[in-house]
Image (cartoon, rainbow, N blue to C red; front, side):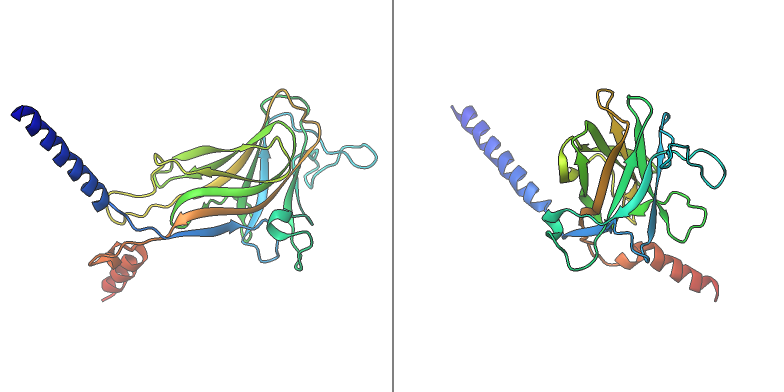
Length: 261
């Protein structure tokens, strides 16, 4: 009987230690919503969006049915991008005061299958149009974007890169619905956003979207529209004695000024 009572007491003590330990591991958070891209196409917008597609993209025809050609004399192919005067009424209402636009994508393939289209940013001041990865502030918990679908059986992924250079693809969701809908995905905990050593912060970067078509769906002519790429992110920065020496820019300034003396 005494042995049983002793075991019960031990179990109670261990449970209490576990509870108090979990409370001791509390971490402060400061969640904020940050806009990465409005998709409004303003003149001072930092990014220009471009596309890349898999094989079997259709050739663009003019009003006479002839093949269109690009500046190099090659046949122009889908997809094409354009900013159009449309928006999700759930966000902006039916008649917003200021001019609001969305980024429109028109695509077409010659055959059905697992076709794909990538949508990626470039810097507006980059004359060569190299792909650019958008830095994401803080430690993100969720990423979302408004997408207009035509009830076609396609789906959409988002690609993120961690500090090690590893690219992670996350499914945002199916776009087999009519009209505007907010697509979002939580960031799995297995995607690292911090280092063990200082500086510990190691944010992610946005690489691209990828739209997939399914073999059961037509692909001859379709439209997709995008608005407001946002993240829900934790901007809390823990402070400690000497935390300024974990700031790379601060350290660079200190060592640069020191080497000049």
